[in-house]
Length: 226
Image (tube, rainbow, N blue to C red; front, side, top):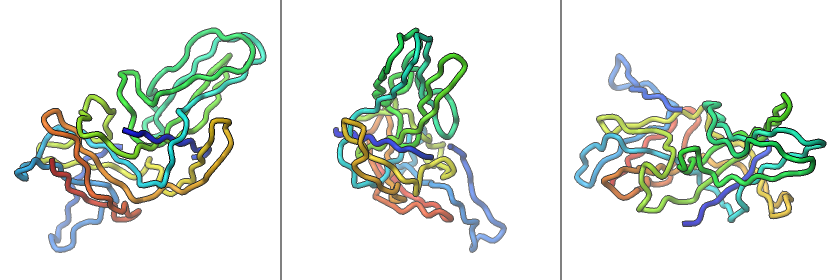
């Protein structure tokens, strides 16, 4: 399975049941939401859900984080989530000599799970100073044999097979830069609002929804059927 990665220079889960006093005019929700069903149409509880973006990407190098030291110093490099600000993984925590150093990130978290598509922050801390950069990760597809323990999922279905994902921290409409092996910018593109959701469950093969448009005001709703 080909995995696509891209870097960006700039730069949530909430279960909601929308309701209204008038059943004919339901409240409009901007959340991205949907149901996960089995082949018989029965809701599937406990399914992990991740979302991919539709982008005309070509394969790019794996993510590398660099730091230059003028003198020997203790350095800690780690990745945090743009949404939660929680630490995803610590990549380096040791004393380094003076010079330029690079650390590769295989886009997995501390548990060895692949992180979903989205925006992450890279952090390099030394001598009381923290340098922060942003990196965008995109994936093009999910293999059928993928299970919920392979990914750090973005949402989990409830007893009715329902899930929601807020738009607040998603990188829609941001401009993203693609680099070659020498670090030169080779393309700039805007993060699309066309998205596809995948459901992961121990008892089923990973399955994706159709491509849908995530409207800024009305969100979107999908049905994923194993």
